[in-house]
Length: 321
Image 1 (cartoon, helix red, strand yellow):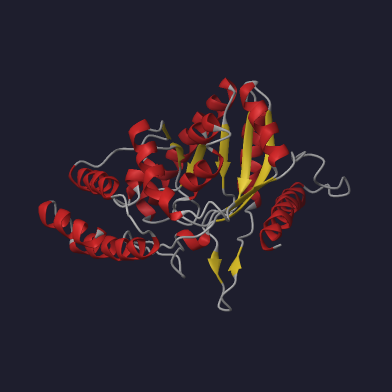
Image 2 (cartoon, rainbow, N blue to C red):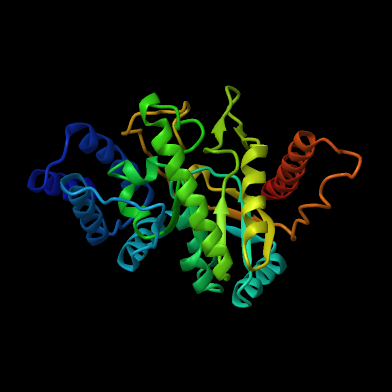
């Protein structure tokens, strides 16, 4: 039994009570979802949590994924995905994305975001046909996944551009200037990566995860026009061409976020055995997506973000067909 196994590990290697109780709740839901939970994987995961608490890993603005943690992350999440019902739509677009990367050009995926484990889910759904793309994709990540001890073991395995999101940059106020400088270094690092070429970068321009409405419907968060524009401008500065696609995903049931945004570390996590869905769009021509009649810079940014979001929503709706 997974819960018995974890209880023994927690007695041997205890951590603060709130982390233990939160992770045990996750383990109970995992145990219900998976007939034979991978106990060795959970042991490795818990050891990584304990290590993070005793000697916190310091993520740099650009973090290169550590292979052993990449494998750990996939092994941790793989049993939860119902592959028989999962779908990857837009295979022609995905082929084009892969060809661009091989040709040392870049791709930026403007995507929605639903769970902490979206990077692992994306990799698991494309790894058979595109193993290098699955392992080398770069994710723009907020500070929560690099500071929460229960998220760090999975984050360590991914290539990350580590930033402070807009909703957290003012807290605490005395750290704002430092956080802005960090973000500037991260964006400069991204420009250098794009200048090298052959990079695929995932960014969620909404700045957070999709959540349920009061009516119980999952609402795909709108894109922040400034975020879309920032990455577009960075791509224009790079020395190699960059292509833009939207990526719609439905992963919510695998690890739903809290109903409300929680600033403190230690959110409740529950999982279930569920399918996951991805849909890659055709290439988005960033200048052509906005009508020429819009001449005001702010209006053009707003219309561009809305047009790309609408493109994503059109693909997202296909998951329900």
